[in-house]
Amino acid sequence: MNEKLRNAANPQTDAASPTARESWRMFGIMSEFVEATERLGAIRPAVSIFGSARIGPEHPYYQRAEQVARLLSDAGFCVITGGGPGVMEAASKGAYQGKSASVGLNIQLPQEQLSNAYQDISLSFRHFFARKVMFVKFAAAYVVLPGGFGTLDELMEALTLIQTGKSRRFPLILMNADYWRGLLDWFRERLVAEGMIDVEDLDLMQVIDDPEQVVDAIFKHYEGRGFEPLPHEHELLLNL
Picture 1 (cartoon, rainbow, N blue to C red):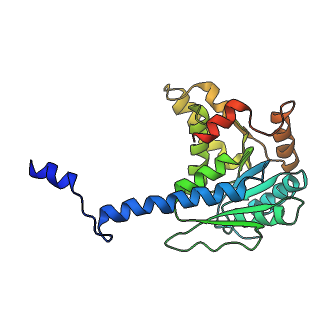
Picture 2 (cartoon, rainbow, N blue to C red):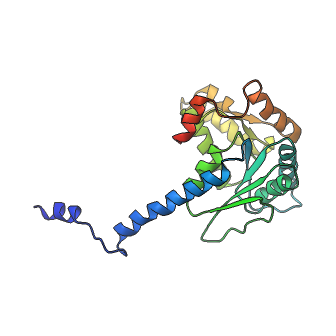
């Protein structure tokens, strides 16, 4: 047998080998999916809220996040955040003080993220992709406040899944219009103008600054159909 083929057919079985470690790592990933799915199964309807970890309670973004989360919680929505500081803490706090559950999907980072204290349900993830699935899987809407790369990552992930038909369509609401204006102009002037996306794709997002109007927009989207996924939407969620 060719030496390359022989080596490929007989990988190292030592538990410390890179191949074995990679194989066993799959079980850790599976356990994150299983635990999160079981613990979050009863939280619908829920809204995922995103935004910067780098602001404090005195910042207007923090105060707006807390306000919109409290309104959503009192309206019957569980609120899902990344469980950290900044906007995440503000949204967790607003939900925690409201009538519905505050859910934190915490992530283990090299520079450790401190979990905020306002979580009725707290989960810890090692893998970003497992965590991102849970944000989408259990959300009836996304509310996105100003943030950095992580916030943009979650927004773009949701846009891509909806645009490509891999997820059901749900409200994607951007708060603080001034912050998002440059990005939305670039989408229009570059992506649409150069044929990279369709102009209708811009309608996947709404810009709403008033917290009460955010709640109203989510209710309006589901008016007449309820918050539970329809049969074909359920299939999409199973195959995220």
